[in-house]
Length: 183
Length: 183
Image (cartoon, rainbow over all chains, first blue to last red):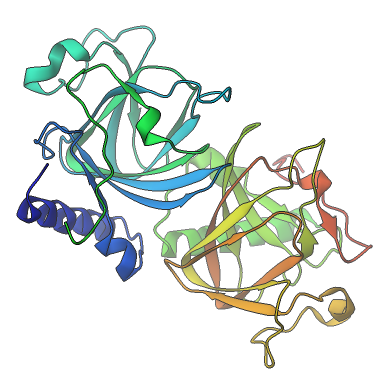
Protein backbone atom coordinates (compact mmCIF):
# COMPACT_ATOMS: atom_id res chain seq x y z
CA UNK A 1 0.00 0.00 0.00
CA UNK A 2 1.33 3.43 -0.84
CA UNK A 3 0.43 6.64 0.93
CA UNK A 4 -1.95 9.19 -0.48
CA UNK A 5 0.92 11.67 -0.79
CA UNK A 6 3.05 9.29 -2.84
CA UNK A 7 0.10 8.40 -5.04
CA UNK A 8 -0.61 12.10 -5.63
CA UNK A 9 2.99 12.70 -6.65
CA UNK A 10 3.01 9.74 -9.04
CA UNK A 11 -0.15 11.05 -10.65
CA UNK A 12 1.21 14.61 -10.90
CA UNK A 13 4.39 13.33 -12.59
CA UNK A 14 2.35 11.14 -14.92
CA UNK A 15 0.18 14.07 -15.96
CA UNK A 16 3.34 16.01 -16.86
CA UNK A 17 4.48 13.17 -19.12
CA UNK A 18 1.06 12.94 -20.78
CA UNK A 19 1.25 16.66 -21.46
CA UNK A 20 4.68 16.26 -23.04
CA UNK A 21 3.22 13.46 -25.17
CA UNK A 22 0.27 15.73 -26.10
CA UNK A 23 -2.18 13.05 -25.04
CA UNK A 24 -5.50 14.50 -23.95
CA UNK A 25 -7.45 12.80 -21.18
CA UNK A 26 -10.62 13.80 -19.37
CA UNK A 27 -10.58 15.27 -15.83
CA UNK A 28 -12.21 12.05 -14.64
CA UNK A 29 -9.50 9.91 -16.26
CA UNK A 30 -6.85 12.12 -14.65
CA UNK A 31 -8.42 11.68 -11.23
CA UNK A 32 -8.68 7.92 -11.67
CA UNK A 33 -5.20 7.15 -12.97
CA UNK A 34 -4.22 3.76 -11.60
CA UNK A 35 -0.97 3.63 -9.66
CA UNK A 36 0.38 0.09 -9.58
CA UNK A 37 3.04 -0.76 -7.01
CA UNK A 38 2.59 -4.54 -7.28
CA UNK A 39 2.46 -4.76 -3.51
CA UNK A 40 6.18 -4.03 -3.17
CA UNK A 41 5.67 -0.53 -1.78
CA UNK A 42 8.29 1.10 -4.04
CA UNK A 43 6.21 2.34 -6.96
CA UNK A 44 8.86 4.88 -8.04
CA UNK A 45 11.10 1.89 -8.83
CA UNK A 46 8.79 -1.07 -9.46
CA UNK A 47 5.52 0.28 -10.71
CA UNK A 48 3.70 2.11 -13.43
CA UNK A 49 0.65 4.29 -13.96
CA UNK A 50 -2.28 3.30 -16.17
CA UNK A 51 -5.35 4.75 -17.79
CA UNK A 52 -7.76 2.07 -18.94
CA UNK A 53 -9.68 3.51 -21.89
CA UNK A 54 -11.64 0.36 -22.46
CA UNK A 55 -11.75 -3.22 -21.23
CA UNK A 56 -14.61 -5.30 -22.56
CA UNK A 57 -14.93 -9.08 -22.88
CA UNK A 58 -13.30 -8.82 -26.29
CA UNK A 59 -10.70 -6.07 -26.32
CA UNK A 60 -8.83 -3.55 -24.23
CA UNK A 61 -6.89 -0.31 -24.69
CA UNK A 62 -4.77 1.49 -22.13
CA UNK A 63 -2.25 4.25 -21.84
CA UNK A 64 0.76 3.24 -19.73
CA UNK A 65 2.82 5.98 -18.14
CA UNK A 66 6.27 5.22 -16.79
CA UNK A 67 8.38 7.68 -14.86
CA UNK A 68 12.13 7.74 -15.57
CA UNK A 69 13.56 4.24 -15.06
CA UNK A 70 10.31 2.94 -13.61
CA UNK A 71 9.97 -0.82 -14.15
CA UNK A 72 6.97 -3.04 -14.78
CA UNK A 73 8.09 -6.33 -13.21
CA UNK A 74 8.41 -9.63 -15.06
CA UNK A 75 5.11 -11.36 -15.68
CA UNK A 76 3.09 -13.32 -18.23
CA UNK A 77 -0.53 -13.75 -19.24
CA UNK A 78 -1.63 -17.40 -19.06
CA UNK A 79 -4.72 -18.95 -20.66
CA UNK A 80 -7.89 -18.21 -18.65
CA UNK A 81 -11.11 -20.22 -18.71
CA UNK A 82 -10.12 -22.08 -21.86
CA UNK A 83 -9.26 -18.89 -23.71
CA UNK A 84 -5.73 -18.09 -24.88
CA UNK A 85 -3.87 -15.63 -22.65
CA UNK A 86 -3.84 -11.91 -23.22
CA UNK A 87 -2.19 -10.82 -26.47
CA UNK A 88 -0.79 -7.33 -26.18
CA UNK A 89 0.85 -4.73 -28.36
CA UNK A 90 2.93 -1.91 -26.92
CA UNK A 91 3.28 1.22 -29.04
CA UNK A 92 5.60 3.91 -27.73
CA UNK A 93 4.07 7.37 -28.04
CA UNK A 94 6.66 9.42 -26.21
CA UNK A 95 10.00 8.84 -24.49
CA UNK A 96 11.69 5.48 -24.64
CA UNK A 97 10.93 2.06 -23.28
CA UNK A 98 13.08 -1.04 -23.11
CA UNK A 99 11.10 -4.25 -23.37
CA UNK A 100 12.57 -7.59 -22.35
CA UNK A 101 10.97 -10.81 -23.53
CA UNK A 102 11.85 -14.50 -23.67
CA UNK A 103 14.31 -15.21 -26.49
CA UNK A 104 17.94 -14.72 -27.41
CA UNK A 105 19.50 -12.78 -24.53
CA UNK A 106 21.37 -9.58 -25.32
CA UNK A 107 24.97 -9.45 -24.16
CA UNK A 108 24.85 -5.93 -22.74
CA UNK A 109 21.28 -4.98 -21.81
CA UNK A 110 20.55 -1.27 -21.45
CA UNK A 111 18.53 -1.79 -18.27
CA UNK A 112 19.10 -3.39 -14.93
CA UNK A 113 16.22 -4.91 -12.96
CA UNK A 114 15.45 -3.26 -9.59
CA UNK A 115 18.24 -4.05 -7.12
CA UNK A 116 16.52 -6.36 -4.68
CA UNK A 117 14.71 -8.36 -7.37
CA UNK A 118 17.38 -9.26 -9.93
CA UNK A 119 16.84 -13.02 -9.66
CA UNK A 120 13.22 -12.70 -10.73
CA UNK A 121 14.12 -11.09 -14.07
CA UNK A 122 15.02 -13.86 -16.51
CA UNK A 123 13.75 -12.50 -19.87
CA UNK A 124 16.72 -10.88 -21.60
CA UNK A 125 15.82 -10.46 -25.24
CA UNK A 126 15.85 -6.67 -25.61
CA UNK A 127 13.49 -4.60 -27.75
CA UNK A 128 13.93 -0.83 -27.82
CA UNK A 129 10.77 1.16 -28.41
CA UNK A 130 11.15 4.76 -29.47
CA UNK A 131 8.10 6.88 -30.39
CA UNK A 132 6.17 5.31 -33.27
CA UNK A 133 7.66 1.87 -32.67
CA UNK A 134 5.61 -1.07 -31.45
CA UNK A 135 5.88 -4.72 -30.52
CA UNK A 136 3.24 -7.44 -30.30
CA UNK A 137 3.68 -9.96 -27.53
CA UNK A 138 2.21 -13.45 -27.89
CA UNK A 139 0.28 -14.80 -24.86
CA UNK A 140 2.00 -16.62 -22.02
CA UNK A 141 5.49 -15.19 -22.66
CA UNK A 142 7.58 -13.79 -19.79
CA UNK A 143 8.21 -10.08 -20.21
CA UNK A 144 9.11 -6.92 -18.31
CA UNK A 145 9.88 -3.36 -19.29
CA UNK A 146 11.61 -0.26 -18.05
CA UNK A 147 11.39 3.37 -19.15
CA UNK A 148 14.40 5.30 -20.35
CA UNK A 149 15.85 8.30 -18.46
CA UNK A 150 13.00 10.67 -19.38
CA UNK A 151 10.14 8.24 -18.81
CA UNK A 152 7.71 6.93 -21.42
CA UNK A 153 4.10 6.97 -22.55
CA UNK A 154 3.02 3.74 -24.21
CA UNK A 155 -0.32 2.79 -25.79
CA UNK A 156 -1.32 -0.79 -25.09
CA UNK A 157 -3.76 -2.55 -27.44
CA UNK A 158 -4.85 -6.00 -26.32
CA UNK A 159 -7.44 -8.66 -25.79
CA UNK A 160 -9.40 -8.56 -22.52
CA UNK A 161 -7.25 -7.55 -19.55
CA UNK A 162 -7.49 -9.73 -16.46
CA UNK A 163 -4.82 -8.34 -14.13
CA UNK A 164 -5.72 -10.77 -11.36
CA UNK A 165 -4.78 -13.72 -13.60
CA UNK A 166 -1.29 -12.45 -14.45
CA UNK A 167 1.60 -14.56 -13.20
CA UNK A 168 4.61 -12.75 -11.75
CA UNK A 169 8.11 -14.22 -11.33
CA UNK A 170 8.49 -12.49 -7.98
CA UNK A 171 6.36 -14.42 -5.45
CA UNK A 172 6.09 -11.30 -3.24
CA UNK A 173 4.05 -9.50 -5.87
CA UNK A 174 0.34 -8.87 -5.41
CA UNK A 175 -1.45 -7.18 -8.28
CA UNK A 176 -4.15 -4.94 -6.95
CA UNK A 177 -6.03 -2.25 -8.79
CA UNK A 178 -5.76 1.12 -7.07
CA UNK A 179 -7.85 3.74 -8.75
CA UNK A 180 -10.21 4.69 -5.96
CA UNK A 181 -9.63 8.38 -5.46
CA UNK A 182 -10.99 8.19 -1.92
CA UNK A 183 -7.91 6.12 -1.09
CA UNK B 1 -10.29 4.44 -58.21
CA UNK B 2 -8.48 7.67 -57.41
CA UNK B 3 -5.43 9.03 -59.19
CA UNK B 4 -1.94 8.87 -57.77
CA UNK B 5 -1.91 12.67 -57.51
CA UNK B 6 -5.09 12.77 -55.44
CA UNK B 7 -3.84 9.96 -53.22
CA UNK B 8 -0.57 11.83 -52.66
CA UNK B 9 -2.44 14.97 -51.67
CA UNK B 10 -4.69 13.08 -49.23
CA UNK B 11 -1.62 11.54 -47.62
CA UNK B 12 0.20 14.87 -47.41
CA UNK B 13 -2.81 16.49 -45.73
CA UNK B 14 -3.15 13.53 -43.37
CA UNK B 15 0.49 13.78 -42.35
CA UNK B 16 -0.07 17.45 -41.49
CA UNK B 17 -2.96 16.50 -39.19
CA UNK B 18 -0.92 13.76 -37.53
CA UNK B 19 1.80 16.32 -36.89
CA UNK B 20 -0.71 18.69 -35.31
CA UNK B 21 -1.90 15.79 -33.14
CA UNK B 22 1.75 15.02 -32.23
CA UNK B 23 1.29 11.40 -33.26
CA UNK B 24 4.54 9.81 -34.35
CA UNK B 25 4.49 7.19 -37.10
CA UNK B 26 7.29 5.39 -38.91
CA UNK B 27 8.37 6.35 -42.46
CA UNK B 28 6.96 3.00 -43.62
CA UNK B 29 3.58 3.71 -41.98
CA UNK B 30 3.55 7.15 -43.62
CA UNK B 31 4.20 5.64 -47.05
CA UNK B 32 1.50 3.00 -46.56
CA UNK B 33 -1.32 5.18 -45.26
CA UNK B 34 -4.56 3.72 -46.61
CA UNK B 35 -6.77 6.10 -48.54
CA UNK B 36 -10.34 4.82 -48.59
CA UNK B 37 -12.70 6.28 -51.17
CA UNK B 38 -15.30 3.51 -50.85
CA UNK B 39 -15.42 3.21 -54.62
CA UNK B 40 -17.25 6.52 -55.00
CA UNK B 41 -14.27 8.38 -56.41
CA UNK B 42 -14.72 11.44 -54.19
CA UNK B 43 -12.40 10.72 -51.25
CA UNK B 44 -12.17 14.38 -50.23
CA UNK B 45 -15.91 14.17 -49.42
CA UNK B 46 -16.66 10.51 -48.75
CA UNK B 47 -13.50 8.89 -47.50
CA UNK B 48 -10.91 8.70 -44.78
CA UNK B 49 -7.28 7.78 -44.28
CA UNK B 50 -6.14 4.94 -42.03
CA UNK B 51 -3.03 3.55 -40.42
CA UNK B 52 -3.50 -0.01 -39.23
CA UNK B 53 -1.15 -0.52 -36.31
CA UNK B 54 -2.29 -4.03 -35.67
CA UNK B 55 -4.97 -6.45 -36.87
CA UNK B 56 -4.70 -9.97 -35.51
CA UNK B 57 -7.36 -12.66 -35.17
CA UNK B 58 -8.22 -11.21 -31.76
CA UNK B 59 -7.79 -7.45 -31.77
CA UNK B 60 -7.09 -4.41 -33.89
CA UNK B 61 -5.86 -0.84 -33.46
CA UNK B 62 -5.87 1.92 -36.05
CA UNK B 63 -5.40 5.65 -36.37
CA UNK B 64 -8.13 7.25 -38.48
CA UNK B 65 -7.38 10.58 -40.10
CA UNK B 66 -10.20 12.70 -41.47
CA UNK B 67 -9.69 15.90 -43.44
CA UNK B 68 -12.07 18.79 -42.72
CA UNK B 69 -15.67 17.63 -43.22
CA UNK B 70 -14.56 14.28 -44.65
CA UNK B 71 -17.22 11.60 -44.08
CA UNK B 72 -16.96 7.89 -43.40
CA UNK B 73 -20.20 6.60 -44.94
CA UNK B 74 -22.91 4.71 -43.07
CA UNK B 75 -22.08 1.08 -42.42
CA UNK B 76 -22.27 -1.70 -39.85
CA UNK B 77 -20.26 -4.72 -38.82
CA UNK B 78 -22.36 -7.92 -38.97
CA UNK B 79 -21.52 -11.26 -37.35
CA UNK B 80 -18.92 -13.23 -39.33
CA UNK B 81 -18.36 -16.97 -39.24
CA UNK B 82 -20.40 -17.40 -36.09
CA UNK B 83 -18.53 -14.65 -34.24
CA UNK B 84 -20.20 -11.42 -33.12
CA UNK B 85 -19.51 -8.46 -35.38
CA UNK B 86 -16.70 -6.00 -34.85
CA UNK B 87 -16.92 -4.03 -31.62
CA UNK B 88 -15.15 -0.70 -31.95
CA UNK B 89 -14.23 2.26 -29.79
CA UNK B 90 -13.42 5.65 -31.25
CA UNK B 91 -11.26 7.94 -29.16
CA UNK B 92 -10.72 11.43 -30.51
CA UNK B 93 -7.08 12.52 -30.23
CA UNK B 94 -7.19 15.81 -32.11
CA UNK B 95 -9.82 17.98 -33.82
CA UNK B 96 -13.46 17.08 -33.64
CA UNK B 97 -15.59 14.27 -34.97
CA UNK B 98 -19.36 13.91 -35.12
CA UNK B 99 -20.52 10.32 -34.83
CA UNK B 100 -24.03 9.28 -35.82
CA UNK B 101 -25.45 5.99 -34.60
CA UNK B 102 -28.83 4.28 -34.43
CA UNK B 103 -30.94 5.72 -31.62
CA UNK B 104 -32.91 8.81 -30.73
CA UNK B 105 -32.47 11.24 -33.63
CA UNK B 106 -31.22 14.73 -32.86
CA UNK B 107 -33.46 17.56 -34.04
CA UNK B 108 -30.71 19.72 -35.49
CA UNK B 109 -27.67 17.61 -36.41
CA UNK B 110 -24.36 19.45 -36.81
CA UNK B 111 -23.48 17.54 -39.97
CA UNK B 112 -25.09 16.90 -43.30
CA UNK B 113 -24.38 13.71 -45.24
CA UNK B 114 -22.63 14.15 -48.62
CA UNK B 115 -25.06 15.74 -51.10
CA UNK B 116 -25.71 12.91 -53.52
CA UNK B 117 -26.06 10.27 -50.81
CA UNK B 118 -28.47 11.74 -48.25
CA UNK B 119 -30.98 8.90 -48.50
CA UNK B 120 -28.39 6.35 -47.39
CA UNK B 121 -27.73 8.10 -44.07
CA UNK B 122 -30.43 7.04 -41.61
CA UNK B 123 -28.54 7.01 -38.26
CA UNK B 124 -29.23 10.34 -36.56
CA UNK B 125 -28.31 9.94 -32.91
CA UNK B 126 -25.44 12.41 -32.57
CA UNK B 127 -22.32 11.97 -30.44
CA UNK B 128 -19.72 14.73 -30.41
CA UNK B 129 -16.15 13.62 -29.82
CA UNK B 130 -13.64 16.25 -28.81
CA UNK B 131 -10.04 15.29 -27.88
CA UNK B 132 -9.99 12.83 -24.99
CA UNK B 133 -13.57 11.74 -25.57
CA UNK B 134 -14.49 8.27 -26.75
CA UNK B 135 -17.46 6.11 -27.66
CA UNK B 136 -17.83 2.34 -27.84
CA UNK B 137 -20.07 1.03 -30.57
CA UNK B 138 -21.76 -2.34 -30.20
CA UNK B 139 -21.55 -4.72 -33.19
CA UNK B 140 -24.08 -4.61 -36.01
CA UNK B 141 -25.24 -1.02 -35.41
CA UNK B 142 -25.54 1.44 -38.29
CA UNK B 143 -23.11 4.34 -37.91
CA UNK B 144 -21.28 7.03 -39.85
CA UNK B 145 -19.06 9.93 -38.91
CA UNK B 146 -17.82 13.24 -40.18
CA UNK B 147 -14.90 15.43 -39.12
CA UNK B 148 -15.37 19.00 -37.94
CA UNK B 149 -14.04 22.02 -39.87
CA UNK B 150 -10.37 21.39 -38.96
CA UNK B 151 -10.40 17.63 -39.49
CA UNK B 152 -9.79 14.95 -36.87
CA UNK B 153 -7.43 12.25 -35.73
CA UNK B 154 -9.18 9.33 -34.03
CA UNK B 155 -7.74 6.19 -32.43
CA UNK B 156 -9.82 3.11 -33.09
CA UNK B 157 -9.58 0.14 -30.71
CA UNK B 158 -11.52 -2.95 -31.79
CA UNK B 159 -11.87 -6.64 -32.29
CA UNK B 160 -10.56 -8.11 -35.55
CA UNK B 161 -11.19 -5.84 -38.53
CA UNK B 162 -12.70 -7.46 -41.62
CA UNK B 163 -13.38 -4.54 -43.95
CA UNK B 164 -14.66 -6.84 -46.71
CA UNK B 165 -17.51 -7.99 -44.43
CA UNK B 166 -18.79 -4.50 -43.62
CA UNK B 167 -22.27 -3.67 -44.86
CA UNK B 168 -22.86 -0.23 -46.33
CA UNK B 169 -26.22 1.48 -46.75
CA UNK B 170 -25.19 2.86 -50.12
CA UNK B 171 -25.28 -0.02 -52.62
CA UNK B 172 -22.77 1.76 -54.87
CA UNK B 173 -20.05 1.39 -52.25
CA UNK B 174 -17.19 -1.04 -52.70
CA UNK B 175 -14.72 -1.26 -49.83
CA UNK B 176 -11.28 -1.88 -51.18
CA UNK B 177 -8.01 -1.55 -49.35
CA UNK B 178 -5.64 0.83 -51.09
CA UNK B 179 -2.26 0.96 -49.44
CA UNK B 180 -0.05 -0.23 -52.27
CA UNK B 181 2.34 2.62 -52.84
CA UNK B 182 3.06 1.37 -56.37
CA UNK B 183 -0.52 2.30 -57.22
